[in-house]
Length: 176
Image 1 (cartoon, rainbow, N blue to C red):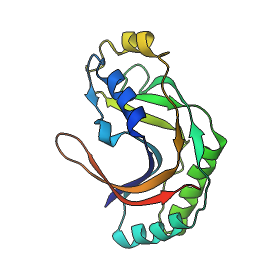
Image 2 (spheres, helix red, strand yellow):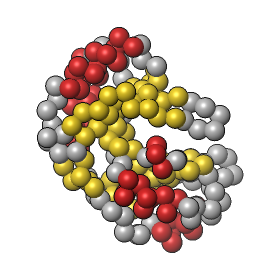
Image 3 (cartoon, rainbow, N blue to C red):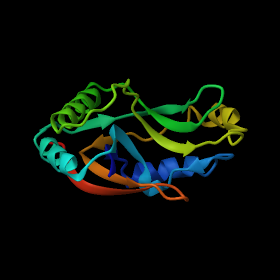
Image 4 (cartoon, helix red, strand yellow):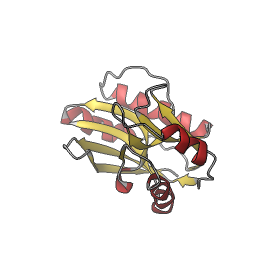
């Protein structure tokens, strides 16, 4: 099962991000209900490993914390493939990411070690779709975006469909 662990974006923040997405000159916008901050992409995992991870995640005991959205960015350099809302550096978020990755490894998952760049994906771009994106970022990159309190996170499954991914939360975990 294709899965990931993420912090959901609250409705009020998702509404602000959706208003920004509506101004995009192109690309495939991430549906408002799919906006999230990925803590760990797990790729395809067998159900027993996800059940083991569920137990591990329930034992993390991390505290709630505040997140600040810090402008817009792209992955892909000169050929942008993804537009995101950046997340300001946050020690509690980095600690939670490390704890989730440790839980995944204890559950027997072998995940590649990647630099953690916390963000909320807003849109994806194919070849030639990104025309006007530079102007969009210049015009809207400094738009104030609301922050939010991370009070929980979830274990999600991702179902890939021709019209985009559907994300279902399998289990939720509170941050104290």
